[in-house]
Length: 342
Image 1 (cartoon, rainbow, N blue to C red):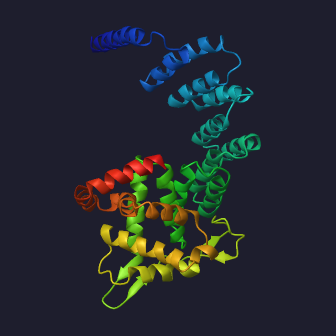
Image 2: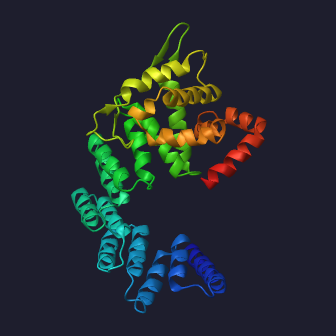
Image 3: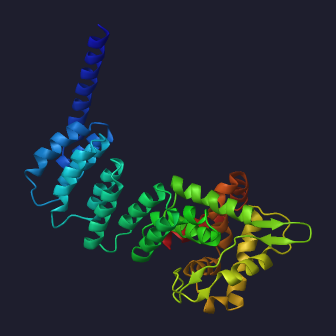
């Protein structure tokens, strides 16, 4: 009786869903309806609809790709692989097809095949940041941190607007001796991906980094980021450069910390402002150009650096940020307006 009642309830709920769906879906394409079905937890119905729709759209990869995605939701990775392999054959397929192919192999524990799938994709899409990212994640999960970082950096090099490689570089470099790179990549990530859970995570990582690696005692200041950063003439971080920002980063930061008693949200704003002013007034930017610092200078010159610094590090001390924001509503509003335009 219990089984019958449960089945009846399920039938009623699905029938009701179908009625609502029919009303809401008028004018929508089969593809849109299939995606909504997947979003609402009905991948089998989505597959049925997509299989029907693709017969009428035989020149577009997207139907086989979405079928693969539905199988991925079901954790049926073998069928996902078969479907996405069909999608890859289309001329208009994109790098996400190879991403899904590699991910499906990775979920099956076939890591070598996953890497080969990503590499197949890179032959077709050599500037795909997401395919370097996925290879890096495979290496990361296998505890090959150096190999993962190399792949994430290559992803940044070929696709500088793709944020996920910066995210993983920030987390990765925080586990090495080159922690300044964690700070720089983390800040770059936050400027590419805003208002996400990952943004909050990296904001706290940056704040905690400053708190951990800057020590103020009664008569001494200790800066312990412990790194040497290789910087190219274009301000990129690659090992073939002879310029080493690390030789001046920590000393300049130590000077910027002078006269501060504690490291908190407000003092970090002052420290970062002094650092940036000295970086340019001492013409260090001419020998060690860093594009992130150039962007910071643009924000400073526009009069919004205080607000920017508080936003950047807000997750480290949310109470302090809220108090600052309440006391500086006009500054904050002007910063948000300017920042969204730039």
